[in-house]
Amino acid sequence: MRGFVAIDLPEPVLDTLESLQDDLAVGRPMARETLHLTLAFLGERDDAALAAVHEELTGLAAGTFELTLRGVGMFGGRRPRVVWAGVGHQPALGALRDRVRRAVRRAGIELPRARFRPHVTIARFGPHPHRDEVRKIGEFLERNGSFRADPFAVGQVTLFRSVLHRNGAVHEPLAVYGLKGP
Image (cartoon, rainbow, N blue to C red; front, side, top):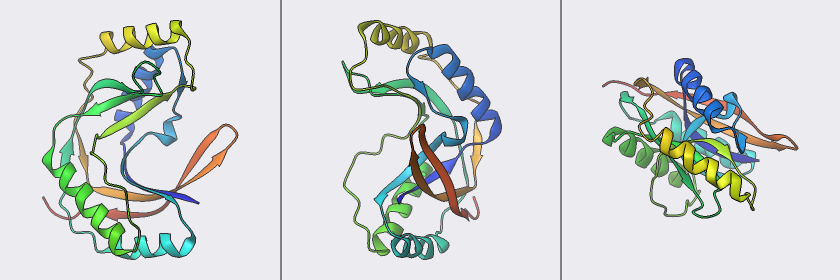
């Protein structure tokens, strides 16, 4: 099964993201229950590997902090694959991601080196978007460039498994880890 570690989003932020999705009007919007901010994607793993990650995350030492979703963008260039809501600068988020990645490595899983571009995917597109879709994406990005959600407290991270179905992935929380202190 596929696994990942992520920050779940509070209901008011999910409401804001759904309103943002409504303004996009193209692509496949992500279902409300799949909106999250990924800290580490684990890929296909067996139960033993996920149990080892769980053991390491149980001792996660990181403080709580505030986060704000801000701005929109896309991945894929001329062939957009994903439209996302960005994250305002927050050093504590990078520190948390580093701690999560170290815990995953201690569990025996090597993660690829990749630049951390924190975001919440709000819509996906097929491999060959039509010219009209690309135009509408550009208009959406222009209209919503100053997007900003209300700040929210990050006080926990969740280990998820992702089960692929015909209509998309279903994310099931396996364990939640509280962040302690400021």
